[in-house]
Amino acid sequence: MLKSIQRIKGLGVFSDYAQPADTAEFGVKNLIYGWNYSGKTTLSRLIGMLESKTLNPELPQCSFTIATDAGNVTETNFGSTSHVVRVFNTDFIADNLNFAGSHFKPILLLGSESDAAQKEIERCEAMHKRAIDGASEQSKQIAAATKALNSAKTTTSAAIKKTIGLVAAFGATQLDAELRTIALGLQDYLTTYLRV
View 1 (cartoon, rainbow, N blue to C red):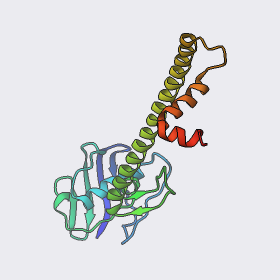
View 2: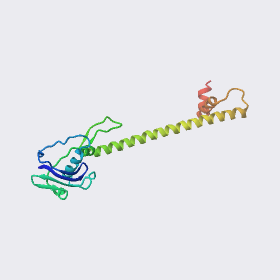
View 3: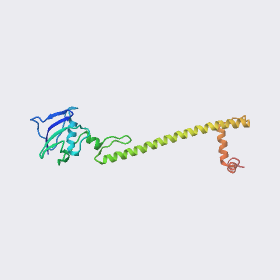
View 4: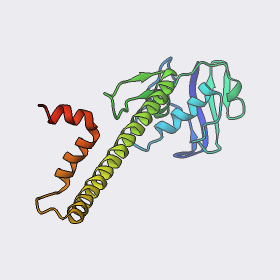
């Protein structure tokens, strides 16, 4: 079990820390609290290195001595310590908890599955965005094609009216009616419009 932090050198606000004589030893569970920027996260990251057995990239090179019931743990031997340590800090929250959500109601995902779940959510959101973007692009193309078709009908109906010399109104609406008649075919036209 960890007993106390005896010495820290070269670590943020703990540039040259030595344990005061009246400091109580750690218990089985310990809570570190204090003012902002007083070194809580720095201490938790230092102790978290005993849990991960690896250097924390957020911490600069430093030296430390942590007293335990099995001897001292230092910057040279922390990777081989057999002590079981669990740290709950902002790093743990960032790695294991997810309160975020954009297209869904935010939920709490806990543990190693949260990373896989978050990646699946991001994949689905990316697919959703591609579908929305694709639909928007299709709508733009349809609107542009409709505008071009209407313009062509107006131009063509004016050319037909001028070529034939029609006096009556002959615009895009009348051209549409004629095109529908042509699309019917002669037999269907006779059956539909010339019933005797």
